[in-house]
Image (cartoon, rainbow, N blue to C red; front, side, top):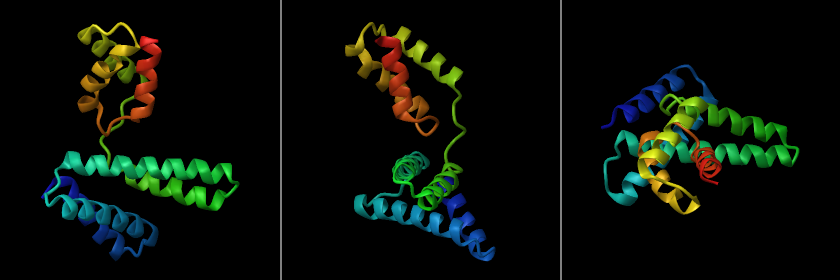
Length: 148
């Protein structure tokens, strides 16, 4: 069993003991997503796999929050933001803009990328290095700006 799954299970037990309903519901939703993938693919997930699931769930929550805010539903938007924050606790430490810029510059130099046609090479090189540590759409935008 992965260390991250162990941490999630321990946090769920703590939330149960402390009767923290919001945290418990969010963690249960996460464990359901993990179990669903393990059952569907008949595999035991690694920490990297779990991080990918958490990233996807955080992205969904942030997108839903933006839609609720646009629809003037602050109550639902706040709930989505809260869930995203709870889930983000399970992601590795996030990279700051300077670190991302440096990684993009290094990848562009290493791959010899010169135009937008080379974006796939740069993204392919960076994706394993930054998985779970930055928003991939923001990374894509930085690469486009650098190559554009």
